[in-house]
Amino acid sequence: MTPPTLALGGWTHSLDPVALNLFGTFALRWYGLSYLAGFVAAYFLLRLLAVRGATLIPKERALDAILTLVVGVMVGGRLGYVLLYDPSLLGLIDGFPWWGVLAINRGGMASHGGIAGVIVTAWWISRGFKAPDGTRIGACPPTHAMDICALIAPVGLMFGRLANFINGELLGKIVAAPGQTAPWWAVRYPQEVLTEPYQRLVQTPEHWAAIERLGRESALPGEDWERGFDRLLTALQRGDAAAHAAIEPLISTRHPTQLYQALIEGVAVGLVVWLVAAKKRKPGVVGAWFLIVYALGRIATDFVRLPDAGVAQFGGVTRGQAYSGLMLLAGVVVLVWASRRAAERVTGGWLRRA
Image (cartoon, rainbow, N blue to C red; front, side):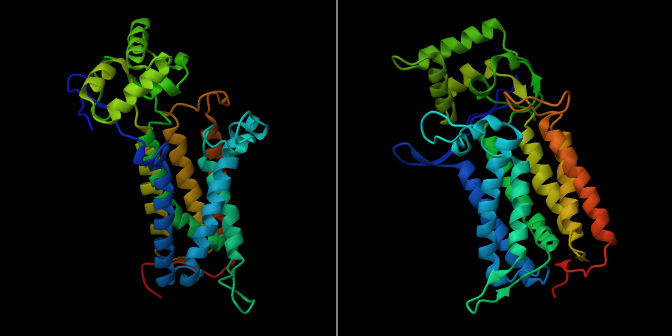
């Protein structure tokens, strides 16, 4: 990892998204490992809640519940991106996969879709699990299952946002133009040159001439300057000091919004829902607080995060803020409804072991 240039301030992103090269083009990436870490952590948290008597889901069925959640998160996250951000992917595309929904390299996943997938999966989990004798064990109110998912989800959200940071994606708004002094906390993402539409960048014609020159110098015969710049970026990620020195003055400095969202969606949301669940609650209360705090955090961070490239916004409101506004409203409604209904307190109480 190369150090920041003290004269310019900030830090130039040099993290390699590949955790381990195995063979050929196959490699373990931090993004995939973040999902694995999130589900493993969720499994142990669910077992902890079961041991503490804070959930009706049996400890012996924790793995079944988590494997079901894996499917819900993956399907919900992908369908959420397609339906909420890019419905054109519902059609056919050239090459494999022929159906745009399966082309996860085009758009990826949407957090709101993943949360919707978790809600549907929680309903499925609430039906209980089939025992060898044909009976079902662990059946519980759907709102209770949703509460438990709200308790174990923040750690996965945090790992996902950290992976977004490692990948240099979901960029924040510009704090300082190329070559200008930046605050110590700001980050330069060389990936902006290859991932952001040029009209959204602030490089001058002189900057672009230098960027294209660096790309051509790094390109192999027959490659364009963009492929060459990608090679230079790989050299930077491998600790090449010369690549660092050449790239740094040409890149804007931005808000590290992925880290903001990791703190809000993972730490802040997690603290709130676990504090709420320290005492026994009526089904639905913990899940409602998850929706409220997550939505408020997403609305706030989207003010300093760039909208997704190529995705139309709702006037001055990003799609993420609009969907989070609906989530906030839903959370308030569920909180009022769950608090007033006559129901036994079955969610939480982890502070005092049952």
